[in-house]
Structure formats: structure tokens, C-alpha cells
Amino acid sequence: MIQKKLLGWMLMLAVTSIGCQNDEFSSISAEKEISSKNNTGKVSAADVSVNAYVDTSSYINSGFSFLNPSQVDKNRQAIGGSAYTEVYGFNIPEENRVRGIRWNTDDETTSIWRPQGIAGFTKDGVRYLLVSWYAKDDAEFKGSRITLIDISPSSPTYLTYRHILLVQQDVPTNVTTYSQYGSYAPLNVHAGGIAYFKGKIYLSSTNLGVRVFDLNKIIEVSTGDITNDKCGKDANGNLYAFNYRYILPQIGYQKINNASPFSTIQVNDEGTQFWTGQYYAGSADASIVPQVFGFPVDANGTLQSTGIVAVTPKNSLFADNHAHGIQGVFRKGNRTWLSCTGSPSESYGSTARLARYTDGADDTVRYRWPYGAESLYYESQYNYLWSLTEFEPNAGAKNGSQVNRCIFAVDFSKYE
Image (cartoon, rainbow, N blue to C red; front, side, top):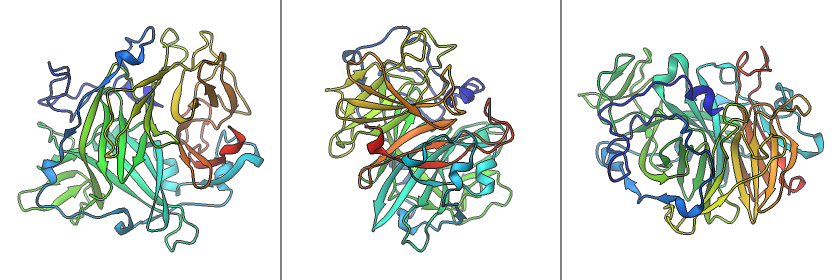
């Protein structure tokens, strides 16, 4: 959940100036991922704008070789079958379940990484899921990562996966936690949501907007680092990434104005818009009105600053009748599906809900949703709605020593 991390984060400004006169970041390496509390009312679509795309890819223009997802060696084995239904707080009715995945033991119990966003794509006949994670506690300096998972039953690498470290161009100074070399550095953001569009990943960045990555520019780090404390390219050309074998470099970003905090992002069903959501809790932030925003996208994947849509979902579970705790969004036609956590009431052991909101309605239609649920991804070919849960043992308010983490898909027709 986004605020669990944000409350403990320190300001990490390294030759960085936030709030420049051109309303962009002179450097965005250390964006302070803290939710702004200035949205006491709601903004109109006319108040929201998108800055021009900023290309930041020059740092990888020479001296690197690139791979695509099919060339990545996947080294971990996920668990299929019905094991995903056994995690704490999984409450989807049996008739609505279609698929699910459990991480290996290390990944479903680690306390230094937490999964947040989910997306997917098909390449060369193989279906993949992508999951974003943020690092926390002792690993916080490592920033964020994505996981590439093969979910094609006919594939020889079915249910295998690989973690890939996300990096960016701005190298911090005065690093003491690890040895930082040149060329690239960890991307220290919350990684709350990801979307896939035409070969690129779009990462929601809490106060900035959208960061962009090209999945055809995965870089293999040939130099192993068993000490796990080096990142970047050293003077001899050796590449390090905390012993990760692969890195994915940020190639650009777009700053979005007056629509933060960006807790999630997803492409709509029609493939014409990116939709973002604002996470505000229903307790401490009860006076704030959460909204979701739709941004038209052109054929190149660039968000447009005209034709922006703002929607204010209702949810009568909260005293102010607004949809708090938004962790994921999906948009189809005039309806928005919201993965929401922190409801004041429980449903079959979970305080999360999947809420369906039709534009202009007085309330959402709500469904059971697993405890700790995060982002949403719609796989149109199969009519699957995917989501994932985040908590390791002894992390959530309710799961105690039980594992909560899984990935799951439901039959979307049951929720339309």
C-alpha cells in the first residue's frame, strides 16, 4: 500500500531541484514519493495538464547491448494450480476464479520487496505478466524492479520468472550504503502501478506522473557481484546491479500537473487512454476526494494534454461517499473498475473490494476482493481481470504470520 512506504521515506535530493519554473524536474533521480495533501476538494479535467515527453535515453546510447523479453533467462519457478487460493484473505467465489500464481518461497515471504503493479503482453506467441516492486527497509537503496513471468502453459519455460532492476540516468552523489559507479543508478520510486503499451512500460510515479521504459532495451549485467553492494558501470566498463543479472533503463518521462498522487496506471480497454488513480486512505485522508484521470495517448505512446477526463467515483462504504484506498484502476466504456483497500467493513475476511463505478452513478457496485489487493490488468484475449496481493507474513494489519502474496485472475464477465 502506497502510504505505508511513504510515511517513512526521507527526502532524497541529490543535485535535484523540484518545482522548477518550467514545472519539470531539472533532475528526477530522487523524486520525493510522498502524497501531496492539497486535494481537499476535487479538480476538473481542465485543471489537469501533461508536459511534453522528455527523452532521457542518452546515457544508454553507446556502450550497451540490448535484449528483449524472449532473450531473458528466467531463473525462478512460480507455483501454479490452486495454491494461490490458500493465501490469507483470498475470498474470490470459486465460480469466478480462472487462474492464479504463487511466488516461490523467498519471494512470497521477503520483507524487503513488495509487489504493487501488474500488466501483461504477448510476444512471439508467449504470454507474459509484468509485476512492479519497490524496495523497503534494508534494501530501500535498491529502488524498484519488475518481474517478467511466462504464463503460457505450452511454453517450455511456463511459470518461470526473472526479477529485473529498474535504473535511471541520474547518478546520486555521496552514496554510503553501496558503491555507486557511473552511467546509471537505482530508480528509487514506489512503482505503484505499471501499464504496457506497444513494447513499452509506463510506470506511475507518485508525484511526477509517468516514467517510460522500452522492453526491447533490457541490458544484461555480465559482472556478478556476490557482495550485492555495487551499481553502475565502473572505469573498466564492468556493469553492476546489486547482483541482478538484468537491468531495464528508464528512457523518458512525462510530468502530469494537478492529478497527483499517482498510485496506479493502466491502459483502457479500447487502447486509447492511460488511466491513473489517486490513493488516499479513508481515515486520515477522509476529507480528500480521490479521483481517477484518463489521458489520451497517441500511436507512439505519448500522453496528450487535450481531451483529459476526470472521474470522481462514489463509494457509500465511506462516510463521505467517496472511493478511498484506490490501488488499481481499469476503464472500459463509461465504467471504471477500482481495486480498493481499507474499507471500514470486512467481506469474507478482507477489507478490500473490487468496485465498479458507472459515470454519474450515486454509488459503486462492490464485489469480494482479496486482502492486500493492488493494481488491475485486463487481458482482453481471455477476458481475464488480473490483480495481485502484496503482504509478506507479519506485515498487514490482519494476516499475521500467514502469507498473503499471490497473483490471480477472475472471469471479467462476472463483474461487468
